[in-house]
Length: 416
Image: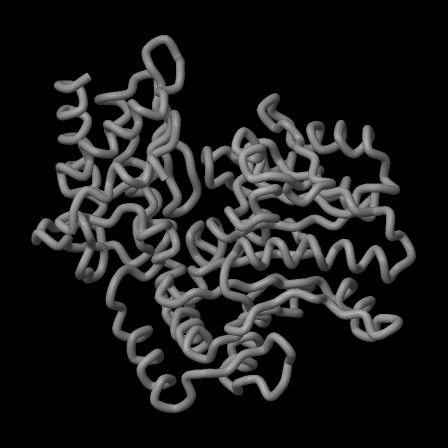
């Protein structure tokens, strides 16, 4: 917990209030939340439509679940149907859960169960990307290549996960190398993020299309982790759909409720669903939790869809262009060897020295601290600073991001 304890040095740092793209801490300091909490607060803080929907549902029916499909809340079924109609054709079967990590684990379980039912039980291997991040539950941690150096500290993790090293450039070639080594009779699924939340790296569109074709040809399930990129962040409900790629399974995370309540969804292809609809020997997917399909989360989800489809989603491209231009100005002024990359309102500054080397983690943390001193909350990793504001941010807010970043880089230089 060392990296967290740095920030837990007193209640003065605790956040107590938020409105729109702004938050206040216990000592009254105000910050522009350019990380949308943990990237999932897509409508910012205190959105009236979402708050009203939660309040009204709490007065009507506040408890209920779907884990055993026994008398589910009507609002939950309505939300699942509405979400299915908004997602790409072919992904019309929805399972609701409480977190992205939970749903990703469920996707892998479903893939393996599908193999067992369809007569190929030896197909259990999952290929994940070496730079990928999929959560910190036990199985999700095992699937996260970006955390592989930490795996040994937690005892045996779920096995049959193999990492494809995308750093050479071609994601398809990286996956193909692992698949050929394992053999098609062993691989059940390939798991990807269309934009990596650990680094911001993304495959070229042609590369992703080729990877999807490879999976189809070899009857490998393609699982898309869109916990970060989904539900409006990139200007569409799905980055894969934006690129014309249809996975076999797609996972969305807490952006479903605007981040106001825990929620996630697993969307499954009709082909997989039909194969599982009447499984032999009464087999079913043993996956879920008590609060899956919570009616408050479903009500919030319906409100969020209304807001997104009512104009917020269509406004993302113009805001993204302004944010990109703003970050390019920061790069030109402070990072001549750096870069700006991203999609929609998920943008990153690539932090490079004049020698072309990526900044180390401590340097990036120092920059993040300088941003906080200038009233700006951002996310950093080794070599990257992410700017991920709410989709509802106004033009003035984007200019504020640029001004506060400029002051933060100047402050950082005085200390480094």
